[in-house]
Length: 107
Image 1 (cartoon, rainbow, N blue to C red):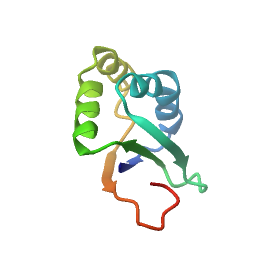
Image 2 (image 1 turned 90 degrees about the horizontal axis):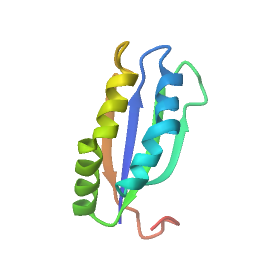
Image 3 (image 1 turned 30 degrees about the vertical axis):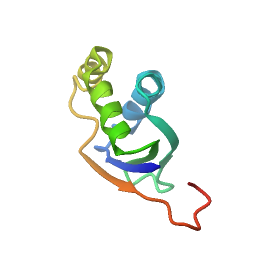
C-alpha cells in the first residue's frame, strides 16, 4: 500500500476557491479515476494557508496511472481553467509518498 501526502500552499484569500473546487468537482473526479482519499485537513490556524490531504493506492504503478487519467480528463482541465481564471488557487504543491510502519494502525 502506498500513501501519498499532499500539501497545497494556497494564496491569501483563495482557500474558499480551492475548497469549493474539491467539493464540487475534484472529489468526484478522484473517485472516477481511482484516487482514494483517506482524509483532508486545513490548518487550525487560519493564517496558515495550507490544505493537506492523504490518498491511498495499491502500489506506485496504480498511483501513476490514476494521476495520469485524472490529469488527462477534459472535465478536470476545464474545471482548472475556469477556477483559475482570476489567478492560481495553489501557490505550491508538496507531495511525498509514505510507507506505513509495521506498528501503524493504517496499513
